[in-house]
Length: 124
Image (cartoon, rainbow, N blue to C red; front, side, top):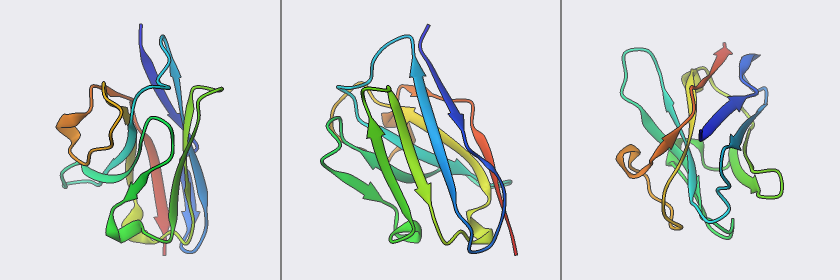
């Protein structure tokens, strides 16, 4: 059974940092692009960042550029997102996802596997 499990969420003050992890099991995703999405209460799920299968290319949504960094360690079958300079508007449930293909995409419909989510709360 394929599983993606997020961890690393929590409560942090504005300006603080968190590192999210997404551990995959059941299969390797070394040949697959992966991404992070988030969903705040009452809002639609939105794209945050994505990374190609080999980690050579990444893309962040404008609101997190310069603050969030996506990376992956295929030896550990794990993807990460370092989040710095957090803002209250970053508060959301963060989901990791994996595609069946190597190229990165921003649409949630482009992803085939999803984790259960981890809560990130940023207080002002």
